[in-house]
Amino acid sequence: MIAKIQVKIVEGPLSKPFEWDASDEHVGAVLTFEGIVRREEAGRDLKSLRYDAYEPMTQNELQKLSTKIAQEFELIALYVEHSVGIVRVGEISFRLTLTSSHRAEAIAACDAFIIQMKETIPLWKTPLYSDG
Amino acid sequence: MTLKILLFGPQAMLAGRQEIVLEVSDTPVSASEVLNLIAKELPQLSSSLGNSRLAIDHEFADPKQIVPFDSEVALIGMVSGG
Image (tube, rainbow over all chains, first blue to last red; front, side, top):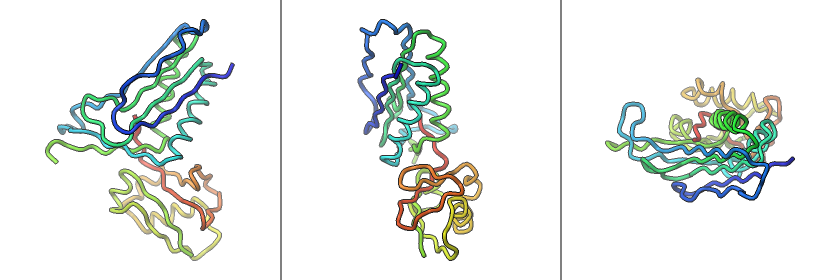
């Protein structure tokens, strides 16, 4: 089975989540992870993060990683969104939604995706501190 | 021959610029040789280059891959998505 995959690079914070296909009767688990900009970074008070991408490579590599993870963990669908530009404290910069038949595959796939994304995908964040 | 390399994120900050232009005397030059040239030109990046890769025209390059002089070359390192 070929998984449904969707990759989006979004300017600024993320808002509305993907809507997974509720009509798919093979789905037994839906897992969504959201990365949120937290107040403290390296012991300093953070105002926001600035994310930079290298397009179209960032989008292409996210697509490759999504396909690899979906196949490896036999997912039904994988939706990923990542911000570029400024994301303030409390706002969402990353969202990964996975659907699978059972929870174990979705949980393992979520962790594997994030670990590999942080090692290979051309995305960079720069902290912008409250005190400059 | 000269080769322009795009820099991003912390490596661009450490270098104080978003691109460098390397003078390449021995051609053809491989991706791993370009990383060595970057280390000589920008020693402040040396510690991060072991975990960095070159991208040629938006695709990751293998270490032995020859870098065409008319390609878009980028240093991909110190990534931090999520």
